[in-house]
Length: 389
Ligand SMILES: *Cc1c(COP(=O)(O)O)cnc(C)c1O
Image (cartoon, rainbow, N blue to C red; front, side, top):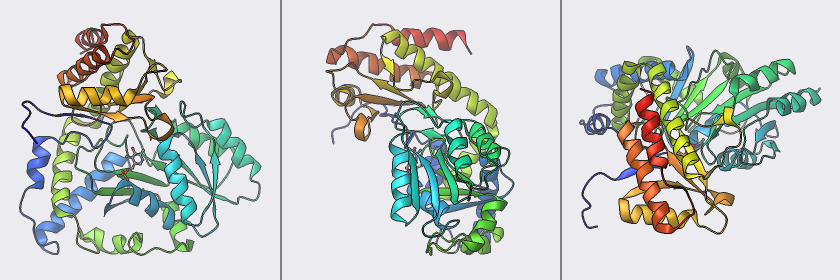
């Protein structure tokens, strides 16, 4: 590939830009994963992740994609034929449901419009109707990365409590963890699923579970087959800082560095930065007179914004022009949204000028492709960021 001067803009909603500090840390020499230095690293990252998840209970780290951590959440707590209530919030909600079905679970998928989040009233109604308590888990995607919609997890918990239903609550936070406020313990979540390559600013390759005491009890009677994903092996090794098999040592170096960065700033600061960048992005979209995919303002995502292109225009052509001319990657519309939306990732390691560069590149791309819009979106974002430090 010919050299392109300047930095590539990786503005997809994950994997995100990996800060130089983290990249450098991943290049340290690999060490003996059964030696004392590793134990210190292992304990540090497991402990730091508890703060990120907002839990005092167990966290496990797999060398895996987020998909692996989805599977781990289910196979460690459920048995063949168990009913699971899931939600078609978009592409990722649908994929998790599909995976659950293939594991032999009886999935009840609540249809969705891909433009809004999980409705707590639906949760309450479905659970109240289940008088025999045959539904064993409710599984929700916190931040649906295909649509830019964030569901209200505390409201889902309240709905479950009102139905007085004992199902486990499982939440996918792969594109919100470390970017949008999230509290595993306080919100009464039983298994939280995470990944390394989005808000945690790491390369892909780590799958995460945070596990409540109730989920731990469910583990005792769960009979879905499990081997690689078995929590027990982790519980036996992790307290000493070790893993049951060769850990992804260099990614853990990166995680250690990322934790220092996130916890050093303070999570509140990190969440506020994402909220501010998301608002600046929406101001730009509004100024362009383009439509947001998310139709519920309280559910606007702080980590990505999905933008609709007018009928008869192709979002993928726009993305390809922007990549070609300005060396910037934007997120594609997934499955039924292909060609109809583009997604702006504004999570992870991001400064004001990175965001303004991103929005400027999009505005230039809109001009080149002739997609109908008003000029001045980047300017609107400049005003917002300048006026709201
Ligand atoms: C990225 C993402 C996934 C998939 O993660 P992989 O690492 O690709 O398996 C699942 N859920 C959500 C919400 C995501 O954003």
